Image 1 (cartoon, helix red, strand yellow):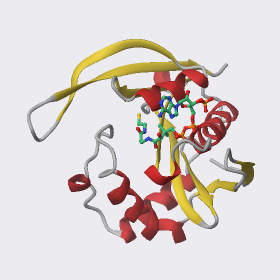
Image 2: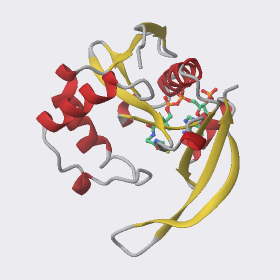
Image 3: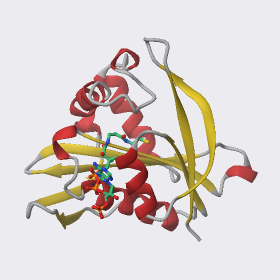
Image 4: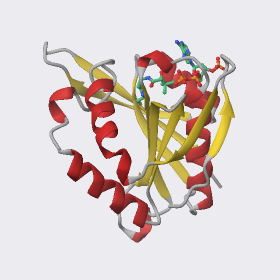
Amino acid sequence: MDYQEKTVLLKNGKSCVIRRAEEADAERLLRYQKETSGETPYLVSGPEDIDWTAEQQAKRIERWNASADRLRLLAEVDGELAGVSIVYANNTQTRLRHRCCVDITLYRKFWGLGIGTALLREVLGAARAAGYEQAELEVVSANTPAIGLYKKLGFDAVGTMPRALKYGDGSYADFLLMVKRLD
Ligand SMILES: CC(C)(COP(=O)(O)OP(=O)(O)OC[C@H]1O[C@@H](n2cnc3c(N)ncnc32)[C@H](O)[C@@H]1OP(=O)(O)O)[C@@H](O)C(=O)NCCC(=O)NCCS
């Protein structure tokens, strides 16, 4: 999916550039995945799951940029990577093509500045422009900041998946399933 770079003003007065990930971003995207997955217990992947190389990451970005139904957007503040949000098709079958999945994660030091709101808004706008009718996500039910962001942007909770994640200490976390109509 295409995307026109945009600059937004944050709560701290700084500017944030939102743009599509390019192959040259592969190395720092890999570092971001390793680092952010260790900053919060609320993600599906832990640092141990990030086992691909920068070359593989670059290929993945290339494939995504060539596809009409996937987009990976980056948020940068003062040239530093603050976070990433993605949208991708729920599945390939014709009857599922109206549905997309979205995801977002920022580095902890950039939480609370309005980047999540701006970045997710852009991803949802691009998803609507690409013809998706509904955006979906799963969020750990204890993840209050993320649920607040999703509700603010019009997502409704539609159900719960019990014991969706199992942590190393044997404890579980439930997922809240959330949906937003785009049409
Ligand atoms: C979830 C996340 C993307 C939010 O991004 P953010 O830039 O901090 O969010 P914003 O500053 O734009 O805030 C958006 C809304 O979220 C809610 N929110 C944000 N932080 C919150 C907090 N600490 N407690 C409660 N609600 C919070 C509020 O409703 C806020 O709206 P407001 O600014 O009008 O009050 C960010 O916290 C993050 O990356 N978390 C770790 C990864 C993660 O959990 N991703 C979601 C996986 S499903």
